[in-house]
Length: 374
Image 1 (tube, rainbow, N blue to C red):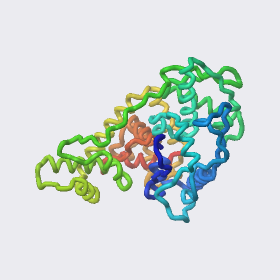
Image 2 (cartoon, rainbow, N blue to C red):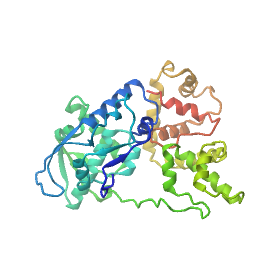
Image 3 (cartoon, one colour):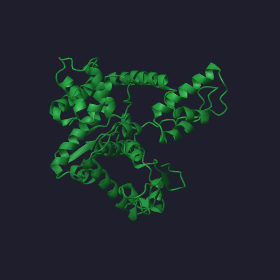
């Protein structure tokens, strides 16, 4: 939501499946229990009423709010599968006003990389508090009971929250400079620092033409993501660029030609395979730049999941892959990647990276297996 926007309308993906994948960031097929949880959370969001009171109200940004809804009108189609999916929702006028006057910066990197919602909420909350405190050169004590009321949803008691909160603080130290230390049994102190301030990123120039002969803009490619993956779009674009560079038959309408190419994956098959290889090279280099402790943590988690998952707990076609990981000394699957690379694939799987692999690659069976480890 852009704070200067004058319209409350939010465009949604064209189907619920795409909504779950693109908006909720769930890139696997959910089971019955997970679907029930998702529906319950969406219903709670739609029916939630928010009240806000300020200790120092004013006539502009700090107006008290009483029982306002997030969404205007009926949005039950978000959680009721018997209803027809709709392509947009509208924020309530009160919520739009609140957002425009009370926008809070959040970390784009954290939003894409954190898979735990509680950790993301705590990270963004303390990052913003660090910003406010750093302006005034202050530190601040936070009472654990108040933090439990704010972030302890779904946890049975304060002690359970405190254990999870302490673990989250350890995790945050590995990815940020936030300095939150226990003061005593009841309070934690946030020591404000400049290193934890969010840096504004320059907006990507979406309509830059990277190739003088290729006039297809980034905005247009983004619109195509409703029907195709980014991998397919980029691969097809490379194919179109090569056709233009070869100087063959003139392509009068590059936009229409790109859409036609996307409908025929055989056209850009080679480009897609090359693009996948290059993407994994870049991602693997990123993975290797992680600290040793971060890579070791991912490897240990994978080992625990492998050990705790019985062979009968995965589909029969994936059992050879699980057995291969349980007994690395045996050759059950030919051309099995080394374990360090499998750990990289596990990291890519969990952090919303590209996990498509080239046709015929033995890596695919291990990526499918990740969805069933427990």
